[in-house]
Length: 122
Image (cartoon, rainbow, N blue to C red; front, top):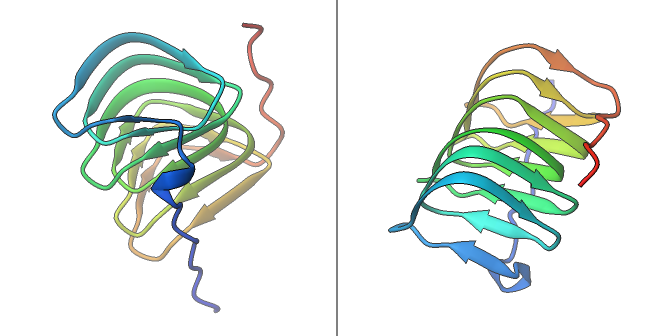
């Protein structure tokens, strides 16, 4: 079997970064790429990309265009385009997306449905 490797994102291309010392609880919605490096709990809704950095801890139900996970996510993920789990990533929850990529070494505990994920009206 071929080893899967996902390309890392250039942080210069991300509009907003929640730093490692930020803890946020509540509802988060955004229209441009966002990276979480700290802690987030609640609900995340986006028309764009969400990047969960390696040391980030997210406890939220997520809806976004693309969800890229290097850290920890506890909650369901629904992506319009794709979900990427890097080797350092861990997801505990169900994933729905037309494309799902998982690097060797990632942890995933949940159901995976490879179908278009409808996004809620904003």
